[in-house]
Image (tube, rainbow, N blue to C red):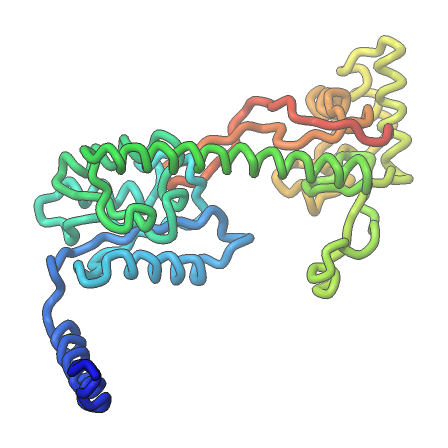
Length: 327
């Protein structure tokens, strides 16, 4: 028999486990390879439909796995309720990270993104942010790269282009899925998708939520039904306008007849209005609202990020709509 097989199995196993144990103990007691200080960046899109605490936890766990044996996280920047499409300098935490990166006494040597590329960037954002941080001597670490992104490495450049395209594709797909779902819910189910019911309508129960989990939590569907008190006034407004009456004349006659204006009819939802009476604008808004003609409209007002990275309403209208049953 070959001499190799004459060695006692117990001696071989014992020697191997002993050497492995010594190497493991040495690796645990030794300092980190590079001893880098990292700034962790993470983000969650919403605070209402996502748990920021849970989201931050799993993103940080992934970031720590990427930098294992290379350093530790010394600073944290986590944006809550912020879309990935918002530029970094308009996100509260990301802007703070960039500001600290400019400082000579910054608390980090590199930035690690938690979770995935999409947590921090969309399409062309990475090149801009990574290039800026590079000028400050700060490199970006990504889970997809398994470490630092080398901007001069052709393979990494290709990887970043693929990730950017994938991020943009996901934005388009999410928008398409959302609009398609809202169209089906409105046209096929007659659901009201939220917002303040227009004057002349009231919210009516439309049955249990189709999602079993939501139904078990007691959530219900809603639809818009004509308000038996206010709906006749809306019909009269449209009839008068079709007959050639001026908007100002319609408002004047409504006040003379003592018809409560929208804010007076529903003061709970109109605390920001005086409820003093009908005016030219209140009548014009009703006449211009496509919902009265059987159109369901979403996202009518554009929005833009405010200084804190969140989005605020601005004037201007978007054309997104779909047909519903005529009022």
